[in-house]
Length: 359
Image (cartoon, rainbow, N blue to C red):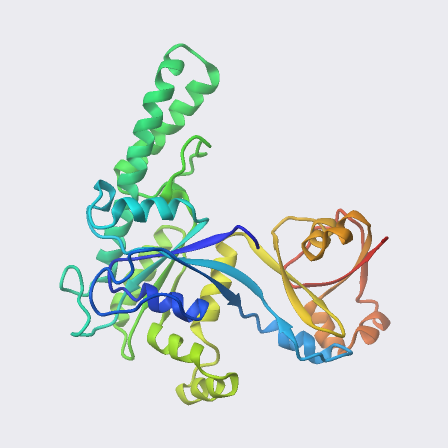
């Protein structure tokens, strides 16, 4: 969906740029020394959804052209302890992160003596706490600045200012305990852009022999913050990205892996942003489209083309599983599984839609 960005963050040599290259097909420098990435790198990642191939297999055309939904990803310069006070590339890091809609924390769980670690020891939970604490400090500074501005109006009894000041004080107390704003339960005022309010995903970047205790601790850490934690081997995922589709499938089969873990990352990022895909299938292609959860059929039509939204009449809708089960659109209609929905129908994850409209 245009304008939605996911930022990859982490300490130096966490594998952040490797993950970016695996997601977006290259563009970020990967090196064993720290701060090999000093500028943000933007790319587009395919959201590889297995439903696309299943739908195309039963389409009357079987076009073989699958067009996935996409996600904009940003590799942001590495963060170090003290970034909120400008250490390392701190000011640049925090500024770039503010422009993103969600955060993917990449955490080093792999051992490699040729790749330096800022603290000299592999401890992904400590790394996660370091990054989070720097974001908390930055948020506290933002709250301090805003509270100073709105304080006078609040003292004067201005109703909106009083409510905002109270919310800021509650957030301040929460953050001072080292907890992210997104878990506070406080409605965050529009006047502050808090980094720890952004939805977050944790990615454990492992090697061939991951430490199960480390992973469990990291999963518990993420769960306490209402987030998912996905383990993957960034090096293998990047290698898979470079292989032709058939070779990649054979490689996965040799490893005993059903699908790339990278697919789980993009789908999890979709959930973070409250995005869902719906599908269209026809003689030219089978395509996934992106829409915010809770949007209606007419708005979905507009994602395909503005003319469809303006001239919307109705939508023919079927759940993707039902279409696959039927084996064809004609058979689905014979079973009565294809529904006619109006403009106010709320689109569901996995709906297959055919829009009828006036030119």
